[in-house]
Length: 360
Image (cartoon, rainbow, N blue to C red):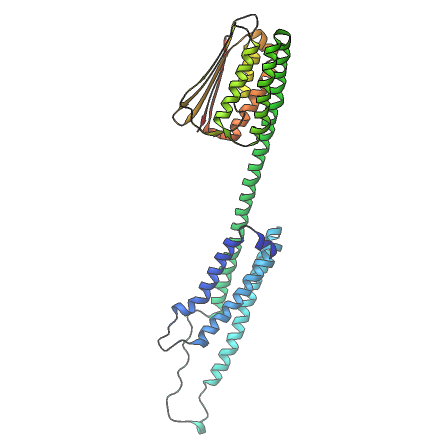
């Protein structure tokens, strides 16, 4: 009973069960024939039968269902429930037969020497449904109702637990994928700064400052499930500025952010894997290269487009590493948005592009 009370579905069950039993005990008062006043003897007789049904209900609710039905002993449960109903109906039948026998003796005509003038008491009208049959039907209905209610509430609780576990599992997966972004990103950025130290120490110092801003964002801001889109864009701007310090004029880097970008919150570090991939595999120091990034708003969607030059010889060497960040991003998008987002990745000998649309 304690487990029943602690169950989250207990208030619903309690309300339904209370309503049914209150209605059941109130029916004799609501629909009885009281032209000559309330026949309390008849009311109490019905309530006595209902009290026996209530005992039957309590045994079923707190003994048979938890210890037999929900423990996989279904045959024993149905046998026990049927036996209880049958024995109760037999008991009522025997009791009523005994009462009927005594009543018949009381109504027998008196001996001839005791005959008196006056009308003979009218025999009691025979009931349309015998009490034992009525109890048998109500017993089956009560047990069926209670068992069906218990099964329904258990199913609801199971569904609630399943949804909660799925949510926790999704959150754990997202946290794991997001944590994979940070080390990968820091490793690449530190390699960039290391390359800058020998080229231009002042620019290397500026890169360290920008890196500290990026680290602050990844370490603190991304702990929340959602972050302001403007902070995410500032993070990308700092990253692009860091990349501009590293590459020469042969590398064309464009970042276009539309003015109508809304003030919303999105999942953090959602685009960085695609941007990292573009700089890591789309830039060549010997050939002209480019990276083009566009953020725009179309209808109720945030549109992200990134395109970079492709150098097959370089891409083939690191094809496996390139796919890791992309695959993680795909999994994050599937977990976050399901089929509500659109991701289109195109690749040819000259370019590699990603088009992503997420709902606002």
